[in-house]
Length: 316
Image (cartoon, rainbow, N blue to C red):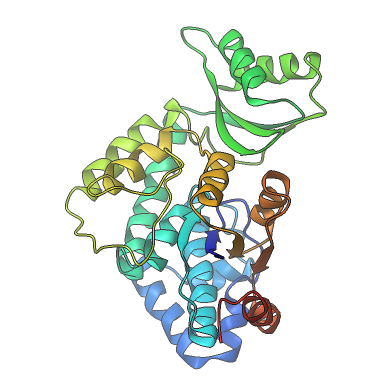
């Protein structure tokens, strides 16, 4: 029996204009963006347009990606009437999953994401760091070279296990440099320093994780509409675990390859990525080559996705 998994994009996938094409077609979406702007305290439409130069700033990128992804999800849900069998998101995208699965209202999720972005930016300012994508080495080799490149005062860890042969490192800049050089000597095809403002998904984000843990304590969730997979465990939330896991996510690796494999083992046969870009679709193809995958970014792709869902038996 076929099962549909929905995947939501994370930070780094943003592009100018994302989300605004939905607003051009629907006055209700324009009103929603205006309402979210009031909650955020700045003009979200300007951020989404990319004209103000803030779209690549963590502070603004995180809410912008969640909002634009959720706009696409709402448009698809209203157009196709689908009921997914599972949700997952890459890092920030896990928060969009929480909204799409109705664990929390979308407005509440946006409030938490704004605070998450603020906390992560503040942590990065206190303890500067970097991230580096390593292509062509497997997890065991990466973990070993990270241990060798770390010292008592400078650490580097695997932050994102994206797919076979693609892992992102995170940590102090000197340790990142040592690890990247070691990876090249070990036969890595490429080592690319990422354009990010901090050492995300590493212990350097400890202050941000503690801040989010305290903020989440008062949240009152609803039962998810379908299982939501956590980045930390690569498994669905169990009762009472989601608050802890969303806070720990900030300092823990994103186990995306394992998440995809666990979703497949649980009966998910097809994957639909929603949000800016198609990075996660690429991870699916490399991890589960036989699994059909599709992505939805803007309204120009809506009819194609509706046809794909119908062809595979996920909508009428």
